Image (tube, rainbow, N blue to C red; front, side, top):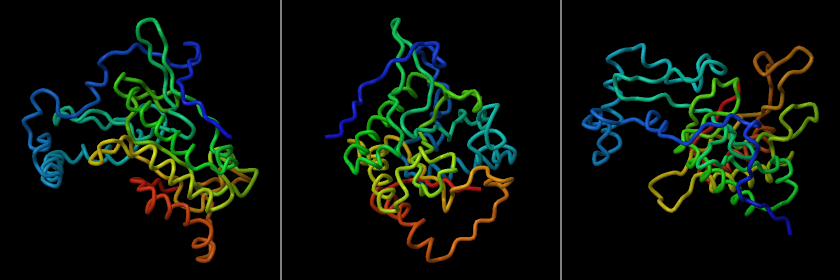
Amino acid sequence: MFVIFAAAFLFKPSASKTIPVNNLTVTTRACQGKFLSLPYCDTSLPLDQRVEDFIQRLWENASWIPPQLTARHGGGGNPGPTDAIPELGLPEYDWGLNCIHGVQSGCVSSGGKVYCPTSFMNPVNFGATWNDSQVFIMGTVIAEETRALWLAGAQEESSWSGRPHIGLDLWSPNINLNRDPRWGRNVEVASEDPLINGRFGVGYSEGVQKGVDPSHLKTIVTLKHWDAYSLENSDGYTRNNFNAIVSPYALATSYLPAFRASIKEGGAAGVMCCK
């Protein structure tokens, strides 16, 4: 029987960006101090009313709005998020925590010990197991470790991202089809089969999002990449300049089923488009 060990795996501190456990996460939360009195911070009010109040406040300064529409400054890379609005008590928020086979964050230290996220095997190996329950277990571990690391003030591991404090929106799972061995993301996806990728997406979404409290998601799935994405860089073409012409038949039978299953059955709350 194929077994996944979900116990935390400790790396040497030098292998990762390690920071001490502290209260940094206080600065990554909205509605602190004097801002608690604002309507959008009042959890007793209906959600629609809180959102409307916040949007109205955003319009006080139109320059506050564009940074809210990108995961990272300039779409990626240094510096990190520039979307904080101190005037409204809104902190920076990183929408781009990669969790393809574990939380891609740095480690944290506490009491002389270093704690790092679990690194599972790549999804292409999960696809070979035909074991939906193990994908669900991986998802639950990823969600719980994300929450714990977020509370501890962990940062993204990659210096490319500017090392912002991690958020609770995950850039995963990747449920594109593994169709070309030259594609650089083959290890990120479960298989070349729409059914297997759909089952992987369902198990991952349920494990990552569902908790004991049905009114709150543990973390947020971002299915990627919508859709028919299997080119990174080849013969002068990149995902930015290649015109993918996909027939309606291929979309319906190959490329859309995994997304449909992940959303309708798994309840995935987010989708990343490919550019």
